[in-house]
Length: 503
Ligand code: BG6
Image 1: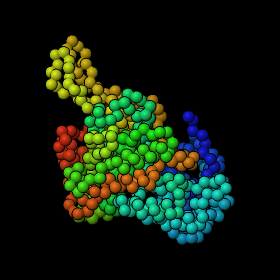
Image 2: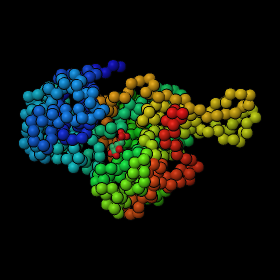
Image 3: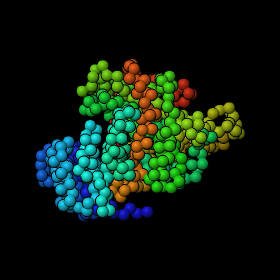
Image 4: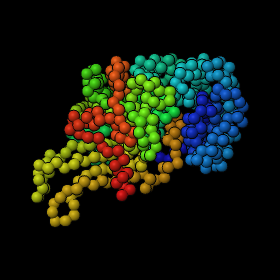
């Protein structure tokens, strides 16, 4: 189905002069305008701490877009030139009432009455801003208009804080108006997981513990913590990536087929899956994880400073930059199938992928073939980034008179068939919010279920102990390999498919 233009709306961005706005939100808006999905009845009302008028914000955005290599082509695009005339700005302290009075005045003059409030601000401002929006009646939907609220991660720092945050927000605004963002859900290949599963019988028919041995979900990054020491030192790899991004991938892979493609039906299934994640005892949590922090070294020829020596990080830090978990979803479909998750900074390759490993055939019964020999298992590899695509690994007969099997990979690469390069990933999230479809957004119960499943690890680590070390450019600490090897398995090599293709 072709997408249709969004209804008239004013996007009110708190944090309008910040990095997220200029790097992702505004370029996505320009892309949506170019595709005619946003029309001339779309407006931006920026709110920021710096004083200034409408021209101030336009000039700031213009300057950034023109000076940023990958955004430069947008600076002269007709869509941007048109959009610029529909940007306004309110400067001031957004913990104070006068800013909200002014937002109300502006909304009454500009646009249709529909508004989406986007909190592109640090988490300590979430509640104060929502509270003021409520107090000034800005979230009230009157005369058929809509008022929506978009909230970025991090959504809480543990189960207790996530519950408290949900409660405070839900006291002011209803769940149907809230769009909790996880930018992984804006990625094309993440959305494709559902299509791959539910549009292809050959996949879905095998999608259970009769045929699947285990699932690996990896989000490896080559970047180090760099200038984010303050945030990352207090956060770590688990909080930063697992209950949000990795669990969204897990839910897409493992949820039951929804009754319809309605947002609530899909979110029900995702929440049910996350609620089925086994909550470990302290002993189980100890056994089922590995964590690490990178040491100093070099990565792709660039020197890397050891994590504890990073600026704004406590030298005695116990925070991890790598984590691997073994989890179970206690459902009929997945009984006994482990899900291994790992994520880390300063690793050997940037790779986000899901590897589904199938069980082995009962035995290899081929002429002149040792029946005891184990064939490599089938694997379905879903590459989320980079090099988005899908691969199926299987065994075939090698050409010739002897009967010998060799592993091959049937490979589909998105870029070979589609032009997907120029999007930021936020286009679909913003568009869906404007049209009022919550499918790609997290619901309160899903968020809380995610935190509940990782809470035993947080509790365990809070008792002390340091993460193991790993060298920059490696696949993480040895303990991560041990986690797999104890089960007679191993991690899928990072970047392996890319290397194949280059040869
Ligand atoms: C963010 C994390 O949410 O996701 C970052 O805070 C991480 O630490 C980033 O680098 C990864 O996103 P992407 O889209 O670059 O894979």
